[in-house]
Image 1 (cartoon, helix red, strand yellow):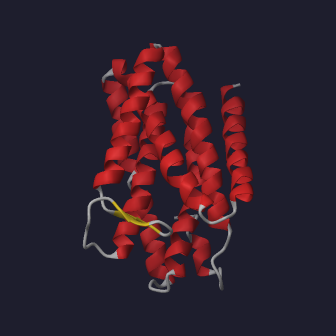
Image 2 (image 1 turned 90 degrees about the vertical axis):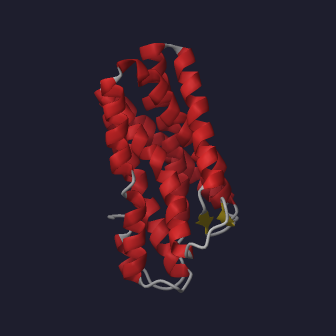
Length: 231
């Protein structure tokens, strides 16, 4: 909701900020998958539960991507054919991206490793800001949506993170043996989204170098947060 606010003030052509922001988000998600989920998961339950979780997380998001109808601004509609309006297909695409993030935060905090969980929470919150702006500006750029409608759609796409964060936290609190599997699952889901969706989408814009530097910036921020809070 905070990230989408600038759409009320930005005029003219679509800003480059969202594209760089998505690169930043990819860097945060990649680093967080390892520092806050995979490595702590291995420390808690060993390598094999985490490996199983990573595989299951990637497979589930892949199935969702294949079955749930959704739309990307560049590559168009994916998933099973649907007559849903374009705005809802676009919101579904962002929702699929956000689901692993909410789950990761809940699992990270519910695992009991609070420093890593808090670092993950802050990093996901930071990367959601440019993501919200990206959704809002992309909808405005189509010429079919007012700024208020674009803002509401952008906000709606992020709400899925809250229930999934709660679900992830409750699952690992109630069944402690699930923690390494759940941490691997959340990491696998995020890594899949980064590799299959975010990076290909932003690289199609022809700004690979700038976006790569933005990705590295996100990775550095996540490493700094994790190191600072864990120390």
